[in-house]
Amino acid sequence: MAPILLIWQLPQILLGIMVRIVSGARFMRRLGPSMVFAWRSGSGLSLGPFCFVPQDASERMIRHECGHSIQSRKLGPLYLAVIGLPSFAWAVLRRIGFFRDASYFSFFTEKWAENEAETLF
View: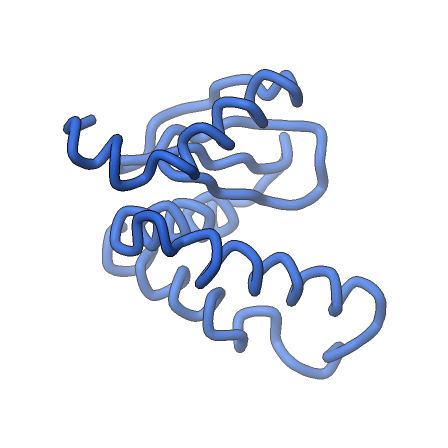
């Protein structure tokens, strides 16, 4: 990783390292600029180059999380505010019953991640 990219994504990278340590996620593979880790959670999370997916994640889910990783590269320190928090809120709201009729991928953060994944892969 280029030093400038390390600085640009520093908040996400530090959080990704902490999540990796605390969760005990195991390395699965590299995909593009991302490192994919399997963890026990049933959902995905992307922080900088770290993509955490369920152990039985589909290829689409893995690529989608890597799409978020690309967003992190583009947005740098803005990623957590522009993508991370809204994406988390969207997932929580859907889980508790709001917006059930809308596609998960209709939300701007998720649609953008899908587009990044399609472009990269």
